[in-house]
Image 1 (cartoon, one colour):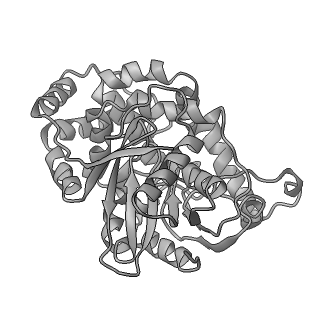
Image 2 (tube, rainbow, N blue to C red; image 1 turned 30 degrees about the horizontal axis):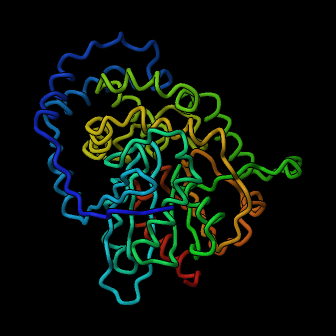
Length: 380
């Protein structure tokens, strides 16, 4: 895969776009209040209005824009598509290269709090997925997980890293696994904070209590929390019209997942609809991410990754050294014996006491410790 025209990039959102955002929020047509007293029907009206008012009147996009611009930003044209990435080189002469990949509804912003500690030991490459953030929007239906993995492999080699490590969660886990599966000649090892796989049928008659809890969590997700995935995998374009036109619609589409997937006060197992998202992520952090989606008009293009990938998802065996960190409120969790069926060389396995789906964002210290511990067991 060809990589061309790597050049510096500066984020500069026009003030007119921010003024338009504020005006659109002010003109929101609100639905009536939900008929329950919790989040079971989605984001409660009172909280949506409170958060939207803050977004319009108290939030400052320029702060996160400046924070991003303080880092080395680049664009690279890979297979004809512009890919945005952060490239933070370590001052450590023994540093090793590491590519970090986010998922949906996340972004490179997930990693901001782990860049400084990780860059003490690693050269960091943090791309925005195709159709996300400041990356280009694919115009061809070929940018699935395997294609992205090949693009990341090509990018790492173009940056002068013939051997490297890869890390990811959510779609980033799928991309990272595809790198480990298909590019083991260049990838020296992987670390994931969402272990992607399925329980082996032959082990389902002898479940441990922990495995039963894993199934309860996933069954709740399938029954109550996966509608977004079905919509994005089947009709992302139709969804895009509403989210591209309504900032509050885009906000609630994302914030609902911050509530459901973070370790923000849910009961064990995750099936509760209690908790509050601001227990795990600050109001500004959530709106930084929501604003990034809105200002780059990425609702439809990010959703299409589900359409591109769910039809062709390959979950083959992975033989490169693998580190697995399991945070308690992850969407799906595998037991070690389930994971061993796919990941054939697990060198690090740890189940953490706190945290959820957005591990680097929610628990940056634990995340950094897990990555360091796992990769220390792998040779470049």
